[in-house]
Length: 556
Image (cartoon, rainbow, N blue to C red; front, side, top):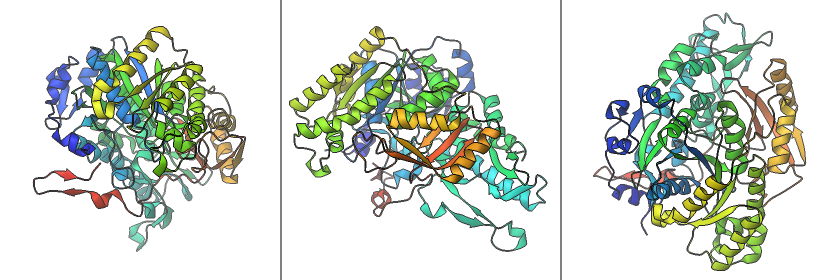
C-alpha cells in the first residue's frame, strides 16, 4: 500500500493558474510562489467582495484517538465529491504547523487520495506565513526588552511581563527560560517563555483580521505587560504596530493550492484548536464564500474544541453563519472510546461500539445546541463490519441526523459521493438556526462554566487562585465582554486525556487565564495543557530524509 507522501509525489499537478481559472480568477489577480502555489491579491478581493455568499459547511469530528478519524481527509474528499457532482466548491483549510511534523503527528495535508498538494511544501515552509508571524511576534518581544534596557519610560514592571516569544517548533526546553544574562549591555535579566507559533496571539490576530486596518487595530491592542501602577502596556505604546504590520503584509493574503483532483483549496492560517481558536483565516473563508457556491471548511480536533471555537469565536466576531456541520467518526475510534485496546480494533465488538458511541452522542447533542443541522459520516476502514455500520446508522437516525459512510482515503472524490448527496439534501431541507452558546455580556467565570458544563459535561470548575485574580483584573479593565478560548487536551471531553467516552460530573481545573486583547478573546488554560509542545521519545524527525534527486521521504 502506498504511503500518503508517495501518492502526493506521484500526482500530476496542474499549474496553479489553471486551478484558479476554475473559479474565474485571472492570472493578474494572483501572486505566484512557483508553479503550484499562489497568493490571492487584494485586487481579487475588491473584485468579488460584493458577491452573494455560497453555503458554508463545517467539518468537525469526535475526540481524536490513536485509531485515527480523518477530519482533514474527509474535508478534502467531500470537496472533491461536490466537484464531481458539478458543484462549484472550494475547501478552506488551515496551514499545518511545522513543529508537529517532526514530532508525533507527522504532516497534515489530508491522506490517501484526498490530499492537498504540494504536500511537502505545505508541511514545511509553504509561502512563509508562519515565519512572518514568528518574526512579528519576536519583533514585539525585542522592542519590549529594548524599551526596558533604554530607560523604561513606560514604567514596565519586569515581574508583570505577559508577552511571550514564539517558535514554530516542538521544543519543551523553551517553555521557561532566563534572558538578559551577561553584561549590562546584554539586557535586563528576567524570566521569559516561548509558545509554539500556532498558539501565539499574532496567529489568532492574522486569522481573525478582516483587512490591514483591522490588523493594525488588533496589533495595537496587544497587552505586552503591566506597569508599576498595574495599568496595561500595549504594542501601540511600544510603537511596534507599523513594523509588525509590514512583516505580516504578505502573510495576510490567502494561499491557493489544489487537491489531488485539482479542486481549488484556500489554505491560510493555522491556530491549534487545543491551545488556540483552531480555525483558518476569516479572509480565506470569506474569499471562498464569494468564489464558490459551496465552501467546506474544518475546525481543529474534536467538536468540543474546534467547532465550539468556530461558533463562539470566529462566527461571533465575523457574522459568519454555518449552514450545516459534518461530524466525522470511525468505527475504530468509537470502539476505542468503548474501551477496546488499539491492537484489537480490527475485531467486531458491538458491545464496545455501543459504549463508545456515547462520545459521538455527546458531540451530536453539543452541535445541536448551536442550532446547526448535523450530518454524521464514518470514515471507512476495511475492518468495519455491516453490523457495526448498521448500529451507527440507526443511532444517527434516532438523533435526527443524516448519515453516510465515506471512503475518500482510498477512492478520492468518488468515495465521498454518498456523503456529498446527504450534505446537499441537508442544505436543501434543513434550515440552520445558528446561535452562539452564550451572550457577550455574561461574566467571564459564567462563560467558562457554560462551556465546561454544556459542552464538556463538567460538574464543577476548580480555579487556581492566580486564575481568579486574572479574571478579576481582566473584568476591571473592561474586557469582560470577550468570548473565552478554552485551552484543553483534545483526547477527552474532560481535562484528563485518559477519560474516554462521555465522562460527566468531573472537576475541570482552570490553572491560568489571560487576555488576548488583539485577538479579542480570553484564553483559559485547563489541566496540564502546554502552549509549547515537546518531542516524543521517537520523534517523526528520525524518519525524514532527502534523497539524491531531492525527493523528501518520511514526512507523512
